[in-house]
Amino acid sequence: PPGAARAPAAPAAASSLQEVVLGAALKVDPVGLVVLTSSLAGACPGCGLAADVLERVSATIHKVAGAEGATDRLPREVIEGLLAAPLDGQRLWLLTGDALGWLVVQARCLQVMLCAHQPKLFRHFMTEGVAPELFFCNWLLQLFAGCAGDAEVVRLWDCFVFERSYKVFIRAAVALFGLVESKLRGDVDHIVEALFKPDQWGLEPGALWQRTLETKMTRSMLNDVIQGERAAVNGREIA
Image 1 (cartoon, rainbow, N blue to C red):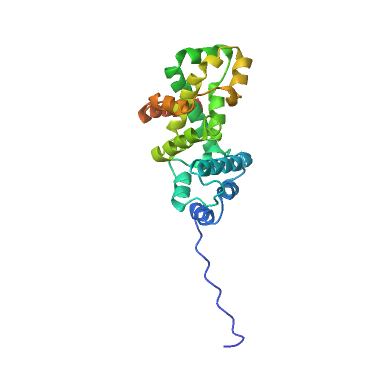
Image 2 (cartoon, helix red, strand yellow; image 1 turned 60 degrees about the vertical axis):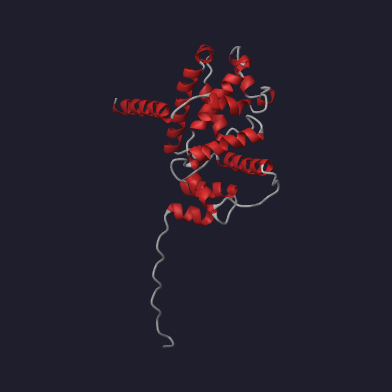
């Protein structure tokens, strides 16, 4: 009846963080998605880098596919795959305890695998005080964009998504160090300068992809490294 008080509307069911992200992701571009996930997950000093990287990824894929200027948004299944385990792509740029811990483990995997595949080069790095894992982290944060030709980098991304593992990037980093080894036979200043100038590496087209395929590495090998690193961390916490 007129003037009667209306019953309050039932509160909407709370959406989970993943539902909020996925729902909004269908309406925004990849760069907007990074901003969204950053604001939901906490402070993200790497948000600018993430936006730049995803813009470059999108442009590179369109260029290789012959669709430059395309504005198609990422399909829902691609977004789900990148945000969900085991990829959890947002860990690349979020400076949270979980993300930083994960990145440290990736760096440790690179150390062990580089030592196994390139022992002389690794020993030279240690003698000169060079930390190769720091360069690997820099490449990884950019998904290896700029480390080789666009077509090769896209093949790395294909492998990354197909295998649902960051292993391909560790293999690519070991391969890359091997390919430019001749340019790293100097002191620390010479090595750092060389590694920061990919345009002077002089890689042959297809060389990085081919060497990556030749760099044998299994998940069990990496799991051994990961478990060892976790055991060491737990030991330090107990002590």
